[in-house]
Length: 536
Image 1 (cartoon, helix red, strand yellow):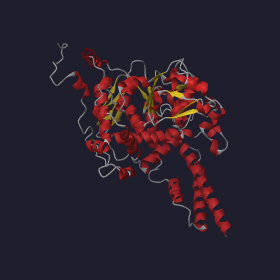
Image 2 (spheres, rainbow, N blue to C red):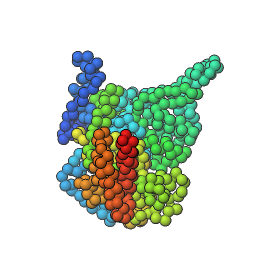
Image 3 (cartoon, one colour):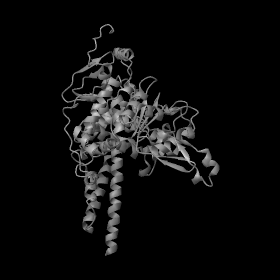
Image 4 (cartoon, rainbow, N blue to C red):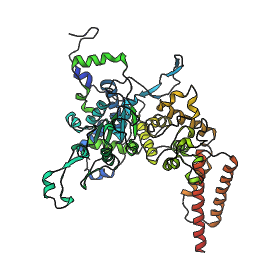
């Protein structure tokens, strides 16, 4: 018996077969096959190499397997019929809908759902992902699926999930000392700890992490940040792992406020998108057929531990061009500079006023209109910048590109910087009716300021002429054999560059970093000149 309007099942079309079917390769016809790079380990794997590894490598490239995993999740497991990661090839059809003239673009190239793609990339690079959304949005389900794709059984994953709750102690999280060892121990070194098994897993899931008590959060921070757990001076070394944390809101609230250091260790934030009611039929089908995606992960998209390690290595090798890197540098430079915060140049940053505990509002000219820097209360840490680069590489790898593109960076930044950039919501920019929605839509806001940054980069002609970049390249060639006359010439060039900035008047973020770089170069050459003179 079938429900009304449903076609009868064919013999080969069972509930299991429909849910376990994997997309046929190539999932992205534009993606070229990558050659596997030489690895020193190949010299020690025998004349035929490792049989299992060579068979897997010959069967399917890992980037293709990653795409197959994505399409299985988005088409068979998680109902996410969204394409908010948009790629355009040809000019796309666009529409303006409603009273607010909401712009709708139909992507002209393969596009993706962030709610599925970003956690999958997090698995590939083994970082820390926060899934945010109301109850019942599938946050724990997608984390569980990715755990199964890492080679664990559903039972192992369920046992390994740490459920945040107000009574959770450090012992609940990490483990307990064995009573017998406590009785017989003559020193702390003799105490034996019964460690929790989840600490040794390659996929770690913390459900509702903002319900964990503050003291226990500190212990969790050590595991996340430093990859070890400590109880009674005993240390458990944890393997590299992909972390998935869930929360019902992204403000850090919950039963307990999340400590800032723990939030800072989260690399990427993904919002669970709403359920499109046009797909209730999919829910009905699952109820009638008694199926659950967690029970039906196809073996073809399960990654072995060596595959995960090799995939991460391949991702790290995806190049970023100098041209694109300079655009990222320019964007980041616009965020940190805060001239009113100090008298000495080096301290003119937003971090200076944060560390001093001075309210942002205490500075009369904190809002400099619509500039990018005026829209934020902080800049980017080294950790945040490195995470941006890693995930941009991962997205390019997933798409089968030989190098990271501008669009890869543009698409990844909002999810990496979602919890890293703090809006200055009092800035006049947000008072405009066209911009007020960006106070809550952080993804669109971050894309907007990145676009603005690139427009300014092009307006200033930084792609064609960047004197500071040229001076840095010249310096990085080395000082060996450089004569004093050439050193004097370079010092003069640096001083003229600073005079030109001086004549320009107002300081901006990119000029702030340029001035500090010129000061650095001047000091290095000055020290080298003193050394030359000392030698006579």
